[in-house]
Structure formats: C-alpha cells, structure tokens
Image 1 (tube, rainbow, N blue to C red):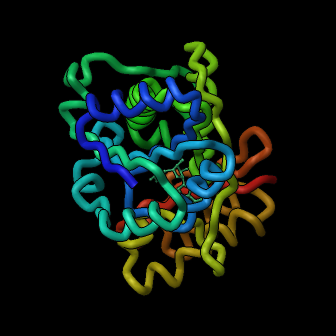
Image 2 (cartoon, protein in one colour):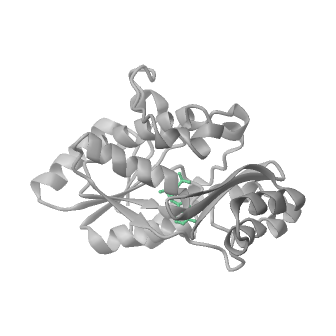
Amino acid sequence: MKEFISLQNWIHERSDLKRAHRTIGFVPTMGALHAGHASLLKRAREENDFVVLSIYVNPTQFNNPNDLAKYPITIENDREVAREAGVDAILLPRYDEIYPDGYRYKVSENEFSKLLCGAHRPGHFDGVLTVVMKLLNLVQADRAYFGEKDFQQLQLIKGMVEAFFMTTAIVACPTVRETDGLAMSSRNLNLNPRARDQAPQLREVLVNTPTSLEAREKLSQLGFDVDYVEDLHGRRFAAATLGGVRLIDNVAR
Ligand code: AMP
C-alpha cells in the first residue's frame, strides 16, 4: 500500500496506471475510518484493478470551527482498515496543495443544496462540492464510491458530475449501521457514553413515527437538539445534536 502526500507523485503514479489500462476505484473520506467506509472500499476493491482512498479533513466544508477542531483523527487505525480492505494507494494531501487558489474558485449548487443540511450549515455544500470536484479531477477514477448515509451530499455530487460532464461514475452504497441501528459516523467517536446509548433513538423515531412533525417533537422530548426532520423525495431526513455531537440520518419512506 503506497501513500502519497505529494500530488505530483500521485499524478506520476496515475499516468502509469492509465498507460497500463488499469481501472481505478476511488473512495474519498475525511478519515477516522469505520465499517461504513470499509464497505465502500470493499466494493471498490471488487469492481476495479486499483483502489485509491483519500483522507483529507476538508476545512472549507466546516461552517463551525469548533466542529473542525474536534473532528477525530485516527491515522494508524485508518491504515489498518485500508490494508484490510485491500487499498492500493492512500492520498493524504495538504491544504496548500488542494487549495493552490486559496479557495477563490468554488462549485455551488443553488437549489437542493439550500435545503436540509444546507439550510443549517451555510457554505457547507460549496465546500463539499469544491473538494470533491478537485479530488475527482486529481484521481481520474473510473468509479467513485459514496455512502447513502450522506444522501443529500450523494445527490448533489451526482448532479455536479452530470452538470460538468465529468467522466467518473458515481456509485451509491447503502448506510452501514451499528447493531442497535445507529448510522456509523466518524463523529460517533465524540459521543459520551450517555449520548451513545441514546443516539440510536434518532433512527428509531424516523422509522416509527407517522409524520415528520411528530418525529421532530419526539426527538426534542428525548433531549435531541433538532435542526430538521423533513420528508422529501420519498425519504425522511433528519439532523440533530446530542451531547454536543451533530448526527444526521435518512431512511426510505
Ligand atoms: P466521511 O469520511 O464522513 O466524509 O465519509 C466518506 C464517505 O463514506 C462518504 O461517501 C460517506 O457517505 C461514506 N460513509 C460515511 N459513513 C457511512 C456509513 N455509515 N455507511 C455508508 N457510508 C458511509
């Protein structure tokens, strides 16, 4: 398993792969890897000759500096997860290489990105779409894998790839959950034991409550600080903070 901090070195490697007609599968992440990420990596391993994982905690998508400062970093464990999943290369770029322009140029979407998480995290999806475009252009993968856990993000990335005639196929992967139903997330590492016990109620309420309004009320009563619960396009979406950790989830309706 190779590691690339220098993008120039990665681009040389990429040229060799392209010359040899090897297909590339790509999984972009912010690290603190768990079984959700591993499921994307395994799918990429099955469908491609060469698997690239990126680990980059992208500052431009954090609207809250405290959230960025608290974001978990577990690089040794990440290497282990990557090795087990059969990753061929890890990209670990630095800010100045990803943003040589100092974030003067950005990708924006003006409809769906304004709803749900976008309504509560100003600039978040500009940061996400911009870094994903940069990474997709850098990796030039045949396929890139994204989780339905971040359903709004997944839809926006699919839309961007279509809108800009990008050639990487976007592959959607189902949400991986803990046995108690909690959607796996790097941020779960920041839940205190009490909040961790309570957190599975988010999904339980989304699944078992007739209306989004009632679901919102129930979650508030249970002690969640609710950003939104909304039914849209045949799914129910929610974001809520518990014990200082913002959780998101979505389920089919
Ligand atoms: P992140 O590191 O949180 O930015 O996530 C990197 C990728 O992993 C994104 O495409 C996420 O949607 C996906 N992902 C994160 N958590 C899960 C999960 N529990 N199940 C499936 N995919 C996930």
